Length: 125
Image 1 (cartoon, rainbow, N blue to C red):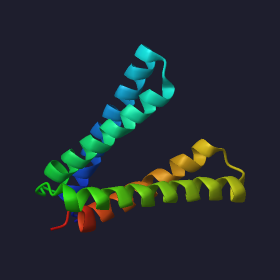
Image 2 (cartoon, rainbow, N blue to C red):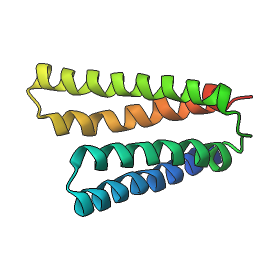
Image 3 (cartoon, rainbow, N blue to C red):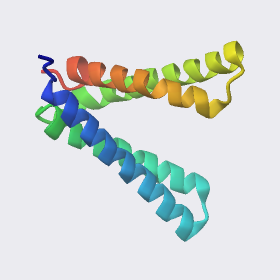
């Protein structure tokens, strides 16, 4: 029988909610203001803040310790950005794939990296 860690299920559910927050705010602000950079930045920042709080409380049931966790979270975001960029670039150069294809390929890799780093480092006590 396969046993699934409930923190992984919670992590994926929270990730979906955070994505909806990011996309929803990005769409709303873009529609209201027409300022693409403002919309993307606000959506990203809100998603990052919501992700920090919700993953701490729901995914990992960890107490908030922002002075320790936020720098680690930002390093995790940086690592995941570089992973995404590397995968997109490799897919383009090696296979001639368009950017979005590489981005889609990167999603499970980045999700796994994010989960493991969050569980073992960002929110670990």
